[in-house]
Each structure stands twice: as C-alpha cells, then as structure tokens.
Amino acid sequence: MLSIGAYRPRHLVSNDEVCEVLDSTDEWIYERTGIRNRRWISGDETLRSMAVAAGARALDNGEIDRSKIGVLILATSSWLKLTPHGAPSVAYDLGMNGIPAFDLTSGCGGFGYALGVAADMIRAGSVEYALVIGAETMTVGLDPTDRGTAMIFGDGAGAVVVGPSEENGISPTVWGSDGENAEAITQDVDFLQYMNRAQALQGTDPEVEPVGRMSLHMEGPKVFRWAAVTLPRALATAIESSGVAKEDIEVFIPHQANQRINDLMKKNLGLAEDVPVANDIENTGNTSAASIPLAMEEMLVTGKAKGGQTALLLGFGAGLSYAGQVVTLPPAPKESSFPEG
Image (cartoon, rainbow, N blue to C red; front, side):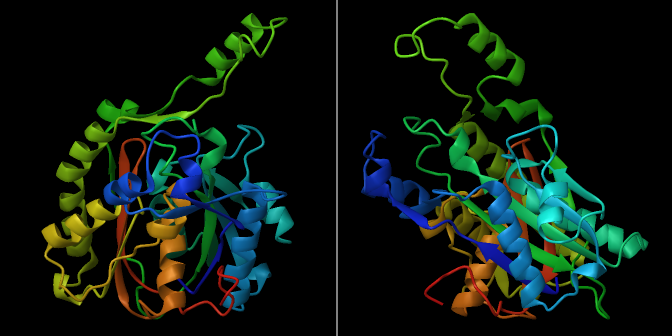
C-alpha cells in the first residue's frame, strides 16, 4: 500500500442523539460496543462523493499519477443501484474514465477482499497500480428503532493505492465464508418483495399504511458465536501464511464492529501488550467495508501507528465472511480526513 486517503462525514452523531429515537442510553451503548459517536451523511454528501474524496486524497497523498492506475475496485454494500454499479462513476469523477472499474460486495469484509484481489492482480501482471476504495452509507438502510443495528453503524470512506514494491507488503489473503449462517445479518426484504409491497399499497394513505423501508437486521448472539469460533483461527492462519512471526506484528487493525470483541481477539491471539489496537469505532462507528481503511488512517494520523510498521488486518461480517492480511502500513497521509488536523 503506497498511500492512504479517507473521508468522514461532517455530521457527528452522539449516543444521546441516537437515543432520541432509540430506546437506550449513552452508557448502555458505550459499555456494549465501545461507541460514543458516529458520523452520518448530511447535506450533499453521498456514497459517490465520499468515495471520490477518499480516492482523490489517497492519490494526492502518494503523489500517484492518475494515468498509472490500472483498475479501481469499490468495496461497498450500500450503493443504491444494482445498475449501474458505482465504480465506473467514481472512476469518471476522479478523471480516470475508461479504466476497468467494478464493485465488490462482501459486507464488512469487503475491504480485505478488495485488497486481496488488487494485490493478486498486480502480482499476476494484470495491472501495475490499483485504487481500492471502501465506502458505505450504512445509515440509508437503518431502522432507527432497531436496538441491534441503529446504534452501531456509521458512514464514511477510505482508500489505498496499491502498487509494486521491492519487498512484499501485502501477504496472501486468508478468507472464507459461512453461507449456512448467512441470514444472521440480512436485509429484511428483497427487492422484489419490496416492490410488490409498494404496489399492493398504491392508492392507500401512507400515513395509515406506510410502505416502510428496506433495512438491515442482525442476530447479534449468533454473529458473536460465529466470530468467537472462526476469527481466532483466521487470525492465526493469516499470520502463518504471511511468513512473519506473531512477535513481529506491531499493529492490530480489525474491523470496527465492537471494541470488546477486538480487545478479546488481541488477547486470545497472544499479541504483545504494547501492540496498539485500532479504536476508530469510538467516534466513527461501524462503517462496514470502509471500517479498516478509516481505522488505519486514524492510527497513522494520530501517531498510534507509523508508516512501514507491520500490521495485522481482519475484516468480518455479512456473508458470513471474513478476510485478513498481514501488511506493511503506508505512510501517514499529508491530508487527513480530520479537519482539525
């Protein structure tokens, strides 16, 4: 990874603001998730605009000539249209119209999947440089009264430029999925069901019989049990496949789903006490496929991690799926996503 860029929405939403609708409290949310605030899109902010901003910052921070980018991969589960998919529009906005550009949907593990695909494309000689963007507007599909999801998710985008190097900086990806339990994180209705529901309610008073919205639902205990069994094995395999020793891991950047889970993973893996663990969830929330690049950027900007250090990444969630790598961190960004610097 040669450079990194990110975009965080302007609207910072506290637990107290969420609890104006949700039956919960600031203390309850923080104790169970580690979240104090999250960012939600507002005004003219969209998934497209955030992806473009993050991608542009990654290119500018690395001083990468845009003409060298051979592919753009957009990891997202919240692009609002099935057709056209988002990546070509993002590439056009970045002044790279014509390059191969595609969306990759793998839930919260999406960035890890996209990073693995990009690295393998470069190793195979298909492209020389790739722009990988994780971008989500999770709040578009939230039920604000659902205690299982409304307090967790936020919006944002993060991006990295991947290119050739003298020494390998991205290990082979360790990934997998569990379709047997995939419905543990699910959209409540599919598109056809939603269209049929809307058609059936045509001519009725929306105040009396609202069509409602498609929203995300999660069986928290089932996901936790799956994570407890699957993720320790995935982390150990990622380290083993990378060829580095566990003692060589200097930074741990897991998906920002729950800080208690992340701390437990570090402990169970036996990482050194002084190895910093990403905690971007505290003020950013769970941003699904944008989670890892945003957390990586936060650690580099704040000095919790430094460019060139060896980091362990692991994304996991919908699918149920996961993807992890051992990587060399890119340099700290010259332009960060934090306005205050």
